[in-house]
Length: 77
Image (cartoon, rainbow, N blue to C red; front, side):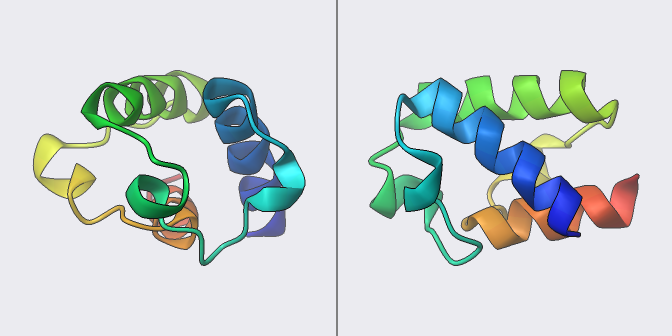
């Protein structure tokens, strides 16, 4: 799980142009990072490419925190 978190944190920091240290498992992607729907779509596409998984649209709304994303990826890899 830590490896997945580290990789997700790297990708998010790069995509949202922020410091990796600011990203924790409890970070709320929309609220804490002020991400908009385009950022979320970009994030989903990046994660799908990087991890080779498909994230269904109905699942995206359940991915509120970085921890939610990490758990989803770990459960589906």
